Length: 381
Image: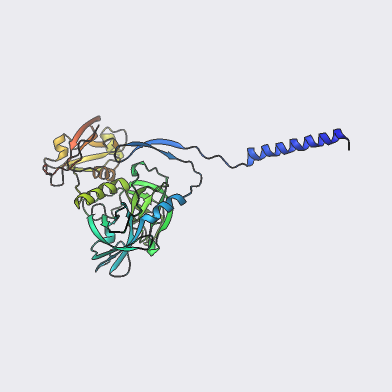
C-alpha cells in the first residue's frame, strides 16, 4: 500500500473516532443536573435565609438518614390501660421519640405516654433509661420527656416547617411494629390539614400531610427534610385497616418547637388567645364580603373584653394575615396564633367591607387575665 493511501486511511480513522466521540457526548451522555431555584424564607426567629430546591433527579437520602437515626429513640410506656392510638400488649404501649437536646430532652406524642406509670427509653446504641415527664399538652398531642444519660447525646435541630413545599421530599424515622430506626421516604402531600383526631375542644390541628410510610409505633418519631432538619413530629394516619395507606400526618416543627419551649420552661403551655370565634371562608362568602379570593378566616363572634374586641376587630371582619403570614383556613389560623404567648403583640391584617386594614393586638391568656403576660415583647412590623 502506498504511503499516501496509508495517510488517507489514518486520517479517515481519526475523523471517524472524533465523529463517534462527538455523537456519544451529544446524544448519549447523562443529562446535566437540573438547575436549583433559590428562594428566601423566614424562620421562626424572623431571620431570613436561602433554601434551594433541586429538580426532579433522584435524591440520595443516606446522609440525612445517617444523621437522624441516632437521635430517634424507642419508647415503651407501661400503664394499666392501652391507648386507642397504639394497639399493643395490654399494660404497655410502644412508640417513638426524638432527642432534641444533648442533655436528654425527648419529644414524643402525648397519646404514646398518656396515663403511663413508667417510661422506658431505648437509644439507638441499645442503652436504656427510665424517663420522667417534663410536661404534656393535650391540644397538640405533644409531650416532653427527660432522661439522664452518661455524656452528651446525638440530637436533632428544628428546621423551618413553614418553608416546606408541596411535593418536597421528606423522611419519616421511627419504630413501627418495634422495628428500631426504620426510615421511609415520601413527599409533602399537603399542609394545614385538620382531621379531627385530637379530642380537646381547643385542639390545634394543622398537620403536615405526607405519603411516607407511617405505621403503629411511628407515633412521636421524626419527620425530617433531606438535610436532616426536624420539620415535624409524626402523629397520626388515616387508614381503614389501621396500617399505612399513604395518608400520614405530622405536627409542624415550628408549632412543636414553640410548645416544647413552654413545657421546658414552665411545665405547661402558656397559650395566647385572640378571643374571636372564626370559621373558614367559602367562595360565596368571599364574593359577598368583597374578597379577591376565598381565603382568610371570618370572625363570627367576639368574647367580652377580649383582645380582638379591645383592638377594634368586629364581627364579619376577615383576617387574612398574622404577622405577614397568609391565613387560608381555620386550622392555619390556630397554628399561627399558637406560636405566641400572652403578652405578645401581633400585627393582624383584615378586610372590612371590601377595605384592607391592619392593626396590632395585645394577646392575653385563656382567662383573659392581663396580669399574667409572659410574652417576649412587641412583634415588629
